[in-house]
Length: 232
Image (tube, rainbow, N blue to C red; front, side, top):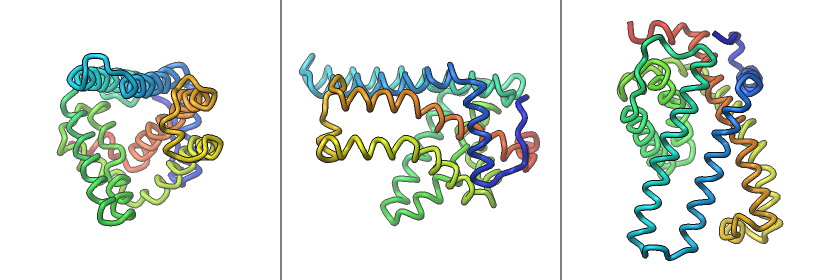
């Protein structure tokens, strides 16, 4: 099992994420590349009329499913390499999907009320999906485990996530300015110079965000003994 210290400050969690990144760089970069390819395919769909709206809808669904399975498989592989997957833990695809949907809806609802509730919900359930992948937890178990493991650490978690995200979003803000506005940037074809830089950023920086996600799970599990005892 990889070493996770008990420094659960924002910088400690971010540093642990850098460790995860260095140990699993090829797999995490592959995850980033899969994300970038998915974005490119979606952009191509929007500018093509192949098969009409029905064809575009089916393609979007197929791409989403394939991307989801690839991301799940690669994330599970990194967790396993880090020694965080319990022996015999099953791969529960639908539980992972269910947690993703529940968290997404809850965060969206919280964001509609105010930004702060959305962030609080996101941090509360931030590692729920990893309890599914690493422990084979069900939806309710994973949400409860994440709530308990993150208690008292959510401000530090948010700081670590902001640090990792800033490395992606600061240069993207520069690309938005260079493109002449956010919607102009979004509409730019991926093969334009600015679009290519955006694809490269997604491929190279998304791995750090995923690494911090895994490091937060490993660090909080080790610090709180939640990993071994949450289902006792």
